[in-house]
Image 1 (cartoon, helix red, strand yellow):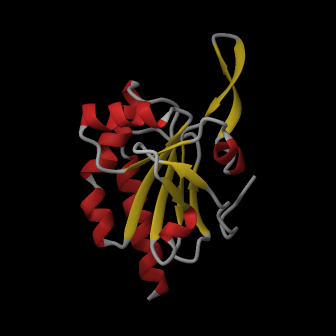
Image 2 (tube, rainbow, N blue to C red; image 1 turned 90 degrees about the vertical axis):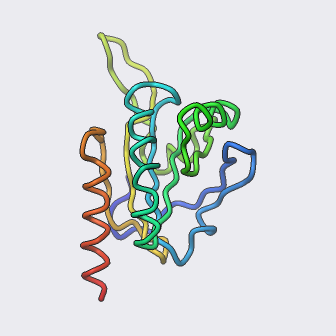
Amino acid sequence: MIKVGDKAPQFCLPDKDGRQVCLKDFKGKWLVLYFYPKDNTSGCTLEAVHFTQARNAFKKMGADIAGVSPDSPESHCGFADKHKLEINLLSDTEHKVLESYGAWQKKKMYGREFWGVVRSTFLIDPQSKIQHIWLKVKVDGHIEEVKNRLKKLQEERR
């Protein structure tokens, strides 16, 4: 399991338009990398909409946002169009990046076990190091938590 202070695991994943987006593309910027279970579900939609609404605030703080799920680029395209999302949505259909960040785990629901995405957020600094990790995220209030943590980390570096 990765922890604060570790180098962020490298990745290159297709976005909703099929273009490859890699961790190295964010070098020199902060990155809010969040993992979510499924396009067009209530919690995932709310989270993506909230991140989109906060996009300019994050941009002013020198941070980009990228969401990763096992959905296809085509699914992301429909999801983004339907909800007017303006954040990077990346497709990890083989779960490799989800696994490397520890967001692909065995889950239990109604007595049955299955593998799935644990809603998680990673705050990655401009040198590609993990600076904060939120696991088993609850959507309400999460975006404010991330913004506040980013602000505090940036103030500590001044």
